[in-house]
Every structure is written in structure tokens, then in C-alpha cells.
Picture (tube, helix red, strand yellow):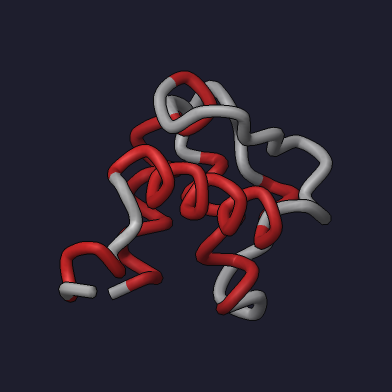
Length: 80
């Protein structure tokens, strides 16, 4: 068995990552992740993932789904 055969396929890796994202964000009612495109488009999914690990950095409940740029800026600033 080669090391490449131990590696998951792209599709399997994508499914695992999606399940991880769903698990991390399961307690965030406003975040429902079913895909990596539309469900991440407003930045709330990224914010929920970051907030899961850094809950004292910002109040997730004050975020506005329509303020995409602020959401992305916040998520990536805190994650740094």
C-alpha cells in the first residue's frame, strides 16, 4: 500500500471537511452549512467557526448577515 492510497480522494476529503464545519457550527442557529459556496457567502460560517474556538473575541449574535465585508474581515482578523 503506497502513501497515496492512504490519502482520501478529493471528494472524500471535501465531505470530511464539510462534516467538520457542520459539527463545529452545530450550535449556531443562524448558520446551516450544506456546501462551501452559498453557505459561506455571507461570512457567518467563517465567523461561527472562529467564534467556536475564540468565543471571547466577539459577540456572534451581533453580526449582520447583510454586512458580508465586516463579517469576513472580523473572522480573518481574529483567526490570525
